[in-house]
Amino acid sequence: MEIEKIETYIKPGFKNNKPIEIHFKGRSTLTGLFIRAGDYDELKSKNFWRVVHITRLEEWLETSDINVARIFSGASFTSLTNIIS
Image (tube, rainbow, N blue to C red):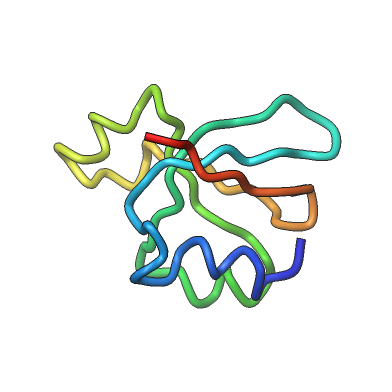
């Protein structure tokens, strides 16, 4: 996916801080939360994104520990889907 399209799910005002489903070309769908860390702009310029998996979301919210996130290539995303709550 293109950087601009992915970023629309991260920008403030677009249901931010809500987990979404990330669909990939070669792997199973992942439900997680995009996060902004100190290297956000550098990663974004290369179409890489930090995502906290939903199973580790509570840990992230309590600690803000960047180590609970994984980095994914936006080029491997096929689509992003909002979770209806």
